[in-house]
Image (cartoon, rainbow, N blue to C red):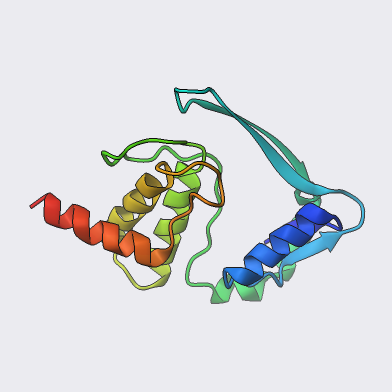
Length: 160
């Protein structure tokens, strides 16, 4: 559930949702505000970052809009809300930590929605968060499910 502006960022977001198979029925466009954005500053050589957010059209998301989506929320296998998340670490080369928490949360939601128990879902989430830090950028760093499953198998084998 989100709001996007009727602008280029909104079009890009809706296209990304579609490409990734995300139901965007509740990502309504707003003619009143631009799409929310985040500016991420990364200190060179350290992977330390600072994120400044402008919620934009998401600021128009109301309790009434959430109430109107009650049937969709009730039918969902997993509902994910988030702010920043601290992620347990894998021993991997770190290129950019910007999206580790997001990748962890998505991995957790995907695993739970696929029927994994909580312990297995957290293991999968740790791997997705760990893989995300090995690449630069927010969207490009998100691992594909198959990549995370392969890595999970490798890390499980290595830890035995």
